[in-house]
Image (tube, rainbow, N blue to C red):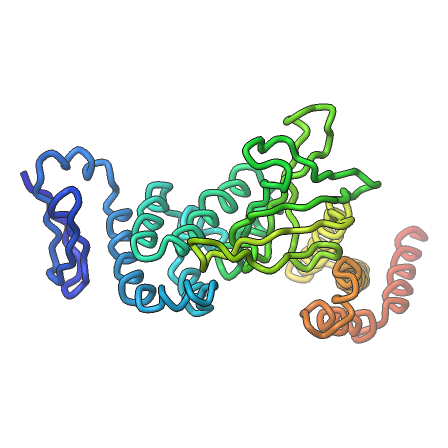
Amino acid sequence: MRMMITIPRGFHCLVRKRRSEYTYQADHVIIVSLVQEMSFYRQRSINAILKSITVSRFATERVAPLVRQMDEEQKFKPEIVKELFENGLMGIEIDPEYGGTGASFFSTILVVEELSKIDPSLGILVDLQNTLINSLIVKLGTPEQKKEYLTRLAADTVGSFALTEPSSGSDAFSLKTTAKEDGGDYILNGSKMWISNSDLAGIFLIMANADPSKGYRGITCFIVEREMPGFSVARPENKLGIKASGTCMLTMDNVRGLQHQISDVATRIEAARLLVYNAARLVERGLPFMKEASMAKYYASETAHHVTAKCIDWMGGVGFTKDFPQEKFYRDAKIGTIYEGTSNIQLNTIGKCLMNEYSK
């Protein structure tokens, strides 16, 4: 029995000849001829196989020449990480709605296998990104969290999963990191160690004990951004192996989760959007729109100013520097409350319209 898969001519393909022997071939057909392996290959989707072939070529041509250097320098080359994102390998199962590839879990396994053949460190980077970080947010995240974080994780942001602590290795549920509720926020304190991908990560999933009385059921996963005040990442450990894969200690000193504040900001933005859409609808239908347009202009411009100011506050001291884009959005948003009629002018217009309506 033979199985044939046609692919473009000149494509370097991976062909399994025996159970332990692989070779590359430049022909346009892959032939898998061993009868005892047919049941295995029948279960693979064609797309998954082709993806593994493409990844095999990427690993051989782009990664292999840099493996020794990355191991000696104990870090990945930025261009390699960038190419992982550009080739969709950091968001394999993420829905295309969020910029992901939308492929299967089995595709992820094949990708990790092919990368690990050339460099296990790179295999770990892609494995954790897809099977832990992305997977958790896909399964447990709110629609807002998915839109906010999956789009970044698929595009250009590395994620890291933080569970292990100095006093809880094998017993993963004996966590000392705490999350105490404070008004509408949670305050995280504690430390994590041996956290993979943490040297590159911009988004961290932190496991913390929010209610010790409930045992392991009191453990909650918190999304923490690298720039949050009180959150720090130590230098990578000098390990025996997988040296290019950064493994660091994390420290949380009164890191404040912003659940309710972010919810408030999101609600304000949505309300502003609906006011603008409503005014546009009235314009298109040829109906009076002066009051609604003034409401939209007033509320949207004030919301933009409020939201960008909150972003500055959330980032602490670094929010006051020009190292991050928040300060530019803050400066740019201010003009919205001034041009095309200041906020006070809009309030005057709204008041006049209301007086006319209720005096009739």
